[in-house]
Amino acid sequence: MKNSVLSLVFVASIIAATSLPSSAQYAAGDKLLNVGVGLGAFTSGKSTLPPLSVSYEHGFTDKISAGGILGYSGSTFDGGFYKVNYSYIIVGARGSYHFYLNDNIDAYGGVTLGYNIVSSKLDPDPGFPVATSSSGLLYGFHLGGRYYFTEKLGAFAELGYGIAWITVGLAVKL
Image (cartoon, rainbow, N blue to C red):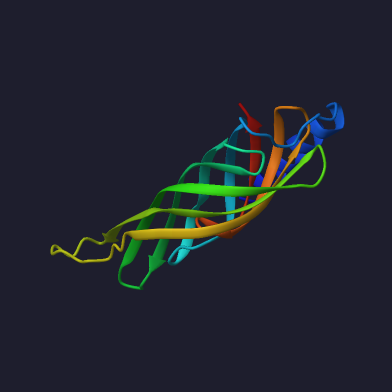
């Protein structure tokens, strides 16, 4: 995971060093796509796959955007004589309020509402049903920013409660 984050920072630095500044950070009609990896997952046990997420938002006004988010993460819990492998899938709607800072930065905050699908597998299989899954309502918030290296390509970072405490990745205006 550390190598993935370092690779992302390296690629973003190269793009930033070789790109011209953009002319707009956020406006009504924008179609915003984020592809990210989370740090600090909300999982049981040890993380086996860091939280991965894809979100899309459409700009309805110069301040308000809304769309959806899809995420996946995995973890394992070692109980000594048994191990439980968990997978987490989140599907939700999200909305954001955008704050103007400058032409290259899109600062925003918002909320998420959706469903967290949790499934698990017990190893070794005891031969009888064991209830270890707990799917349910997903609610969250986010505070983040996108920095655009070009008019269409940038990086984003979000703090919040949802799929991870911190999510970083690639931001694209479609």
